[in-house]
Length: 476
Image (cartoon, rainbow, N blue to C red; front, top):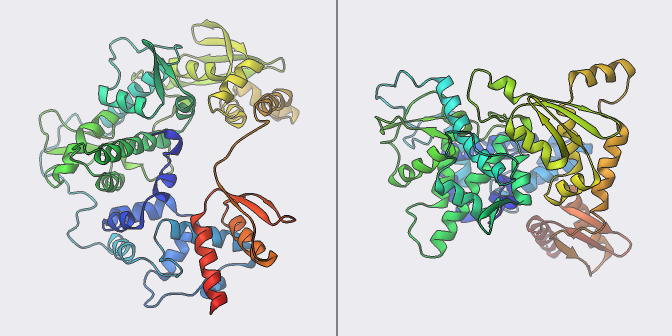
């Protein structure tokens, strides 16, 4: 179980068709996947045929697409089929998705997949500011625990960190590992820290799903089902921030999920009234592209005080001699800087150090890319650097430093491996060309050699379907 494979799109692509049929029985799930997972052209196709009485043909879709957008069309169709929104070898919506997306748009029904508002009195102290502070504290505890494994920072006084169940999940997901009596952060953990908050939340949720699947496969009684859990995550994403929802309307298995969701900071249950819960921004924006809580690379802070914005702030001055000065107070921000730099001095509100070959190569070995480092430095560049760049019409960061960072990464990438499938020995070149072009159009062709008639693809499912359809067409 690894966070490397727990992006939502990758997780969904590996699900079976029967699982999707169960997922799409809930309208909020169908709407969430439509909003988050589909590119614009795929959304147009779905809305265009949603109320069509008869299936469309591929030639009909060709009329909707400009000649120079054929690649985007093929990619959209590949995604729609991989998510079982379109039926195989047809331009028609699957039954469960069509029915659920109609219910989500039109309303009606007694499915309660968008939550049931609580009729209980709402505590006077629970407002938007309280929920934001609550969610930040919960999420900061998790991030602090991961960062503490670097040895560069420790927990704030009075903080016990996340619950033991969350710690076990981080360990199972190999974000951290135990070396003797000490905790060590892994390259997966480093990559996790540099993700934006929404991706971090999904990484933990999907690790939880995988843990439940593993427990059920081993015969352990978890009282939870991964499909129902995923449906509940999408339900939470459809709720309104700041509103109270009834726990009585939830099934028993979903009520069993609430303690873990509290530990993640996705929901708040009042201490004296367990019959209602409040979704936080971490939950209500699960299916949006909005960064609701700042990630480590954007300045998370574990201090929930009135001056937290100032303590989160990090501005960097980078010189052509690779010396770096950062005006920062957040321990988490300092830990992030130490991931790719050699910090020499630390004062109140200021740290200084160097970007070195060793520090960059160490960062790369932990899964951090040169582009991530450059992007971070550019995002947090001091206002002085921006003014100087504008006045002299030069880049914000010194080009010699940017080039050297990328060259140091290239030193570690002389040989790289990638999982995938090699296609060769086609009956004729025409068949190879058609299949290779299709793989290229849907974005899964990693390498091809037209002279030898072979190509390498990262995914095979859509290619297999394309080859079957061609075979049937030739036989007909």
